[in-house]
Length: 284
Image (cartoon, rainbow, N blue to C red; front, side, top):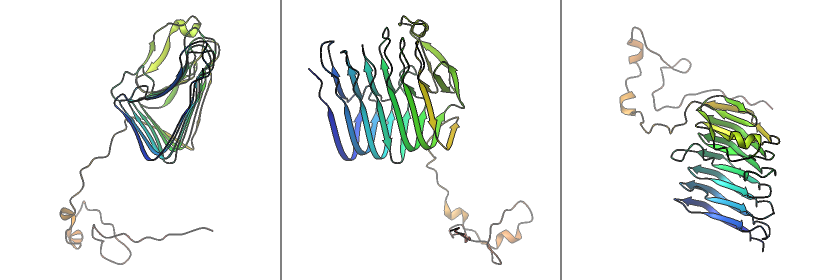
């Protein structure tokens, strides 16, 4: 019969760690449709959970869909969300978060994409669709793939006020394959079509794949502030010692050269802990 659906409504934070999994699947050709996964939460945090969220179909029906709605953020580190079809077309992955979507690879192999909506080799069906929507979307040395080795590539759409990809400029390195920095290499070659015979491309940097032997899909990046960076790292936890900065304000006047003084109008320079006064203008 048909696989069931999973619906989760978690108020604050949903964590999926260390091999934990949420999955639905149809397990034979004669079985019914694959189920879908619908998650609503404040924050979704996944760590070391490859195939942590998965909808798969071994039947003649398309793979199920994965829908995630987070009020604040979705963070994946060495964890994957996937839909996969063995015979039919891939399902869709739709992720929307209020503030941040971050997809980060640290320990897993570079040829393991963390978001996938694929169909199996030797199938001429279409890959699924992947949509990422948030104020800030970050892809840090991770792969996003909606491909079909011997079929038609799927679609990837990124919507955000800002977009960050590690590794450098986002460039097209092959039909339907876009990557930023890192080494581009070929994985496998198990398919029968021109794309399958040559294998699939992957990268040690951030990459997006909508390739297909019969036709490529579309990759759309809609962000007014699309940017790239060489590395993404946490801010330093070393703070300045205010006591070392609290010197006599008049000392700046005795410095002969090499000093920088920031002050307001007609007054001595402000102390380090004081707020600087400014003028705010509002245009109506």
